[in-house]
Length: 200
Image 1 (cartoon, one colour):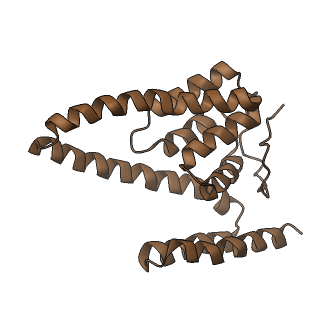
Image 2 (cartoon, helix red, strand yellow):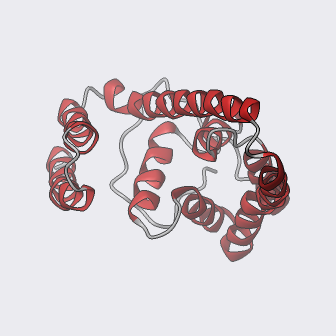
């Protein structure tokens, strides 16, 4: 039986070809999955969280991940931390939220502290600076790949108004550099209104 997120957004219909989610994970499986996400989090863990939850474990459909991500994006705090708590809570209650959060931040925190210590000693080495430039480029590529995968459900449903809203956000914030809060203050209610009207 498929697990449902406890906080419901207006869910997007999935296509018939969409893979069916697997059985809900146990508390231990939640911890292991988010620990793997944390340890694999080169370039940020959002890409790896979608890969784990949707592509590999199939605990969520692409549309469900987009809905959860949209909710976590507008909540205070890091989006991926919010996602781990929301997903863990929806699957296994408070214990699920706790182990997902610990699995996500625990291993990464230990590694970051260790590398921060090394960087404080060797950070001025020119070769290391060139390596970090290459890492930044690869991380940007992962973000672009993640954006494309999240946009797939919109194109599969041929929801051109929602696609236009995504392009509008990119143009106003990414190109025109308008203040993000003013753009979202206008476009989020407009997006909700469009989605609500299409489902009537």
